[in-house]
Length: 588
Image (cartoon, rainbow, N blue to C red):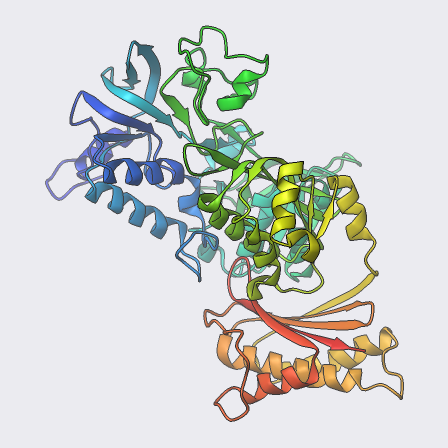
């Protein structure tokens, strides 16, 4: 690398490059109030909060700020950005905000050790120096697991990529792309890449996507025409001169190998916490995740050699005044939201027989109710068959905060009518709080998750079909033909019913509006449940349609006025990645 100053660097280290570009690679002081390890989302957010309160704050990052979230093509669930924001844009804004408040950032510098003596905590740095702080926050993030193999390692960064596909997606336009992994991260990467690549092939070692991926994402992949899924398949090797050109794949059942052309390979096969340097300093589980708070009280008391008279605080490690946040936390507590008076709430997601289960634990009060609402609305926008809210771990529910559940159920953004919203596992105090605000009367409440799953299964069976349309003038005609064909297959075209013609008119209006205003591909979906026919049209446009009563005399309002007259109900909800879905329910 040749700089304008005339200096030449050959294969420079991160530290050398960062220093020449003007970044700080050494702490400005020897002692701080708070030292943060890692400049991902958790570390940056903590830096903003701490520095804004006047604390002398240090952030140490071995690479660059942003973490894995910084590589995301679009983050839709971050507060304050209703249309989403690119991961790198969010990282830059948060970094700048913390820097303006006075936080000291050190880049290209790894932390190699952590010790505690008295009231001081000390971090050892890779260059041999150290820094002291009154408190430490561990947020080092994770590293993607590698496939291994010398050929693939040589091609890393030249067609072989580990992690999200945010910045590389446009570079593979019109080419053949492969994604390794069967989890949600791999599924989301495949959907994003499919918007640019000619074909995306998912390579999954397991027998089915549904075993490790959320059901809503499995359905999205199945509905995307240029995504193919190869189960029980693994990558054996990569080939190419200077960059990836081909892959050798192996069928795990038959033992047969084949070589296929490939322009890019994205590997998302799980991650490992960057906590090797912490072993012996704080308690970790076998996978290297940091144990905090109540996870340290497994034996009924504080951990061995715990020096404080009090028990560990929420998110506090086995070393007092050292806390952990973000991915390095034990997976038993992957998400957390701070409540008032030092109390907190934790959130965990899982799937059960096609139902999305979101489990809350801790305290839900007025301070954390907003987080509950954002989480549930985002989950409902993913359009699962059922969303089960597990309250078994909630120790206390503020009656004023209990209204959040009925608010979510009535919120226009969540009103996809075929998704069931259920509660379960409420303790006596929680059940009483729900009763006081009549939430238990408005929503179905079950004793356990298992009973809630069975309750979701008791709904009438659903017939579904979907069509993807290009934004062309003939899209509405294809939509009308699709509606008639599906209704005929579902035997809804009896002479004494008008549902087919009403469905044709509704679909024509919604598809036409999407093509004209969004200028993106359009997905037309039909669902038949009981005596209701649901029509939904999704696009990826940026224009938001307000769910207000349409008026025939206003510009653009005639079509939606017609939809409202023909249907029993209609609504708008934001799509989880981009765009929106407009739906309408018709009575048979």
